[in-house]
Image (tube, rainbow, N blue to C red; front, side, top):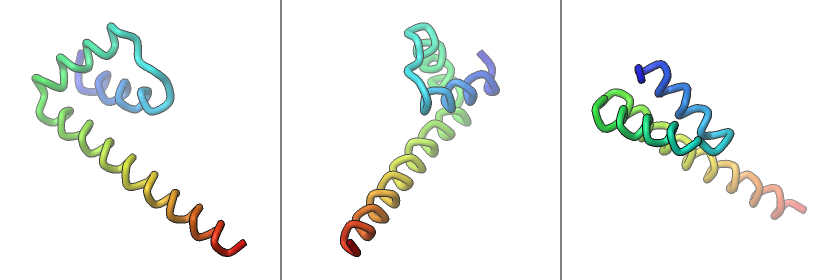
Length: 65
């Protein structure tokens, strides 16, 4: 697996569940590739921040009603 394939799988994992072979290949790649490991962590952080922001916006809208 190369870095392009790894990042594509990381993106796909946001939309669907990866197969066992995809998860294993991605896991091996991210253990060996520091750049992809960092990218995966950054994606997780952005996802957490985005969800927290969306939750806060929803709470603000509910409070206005």
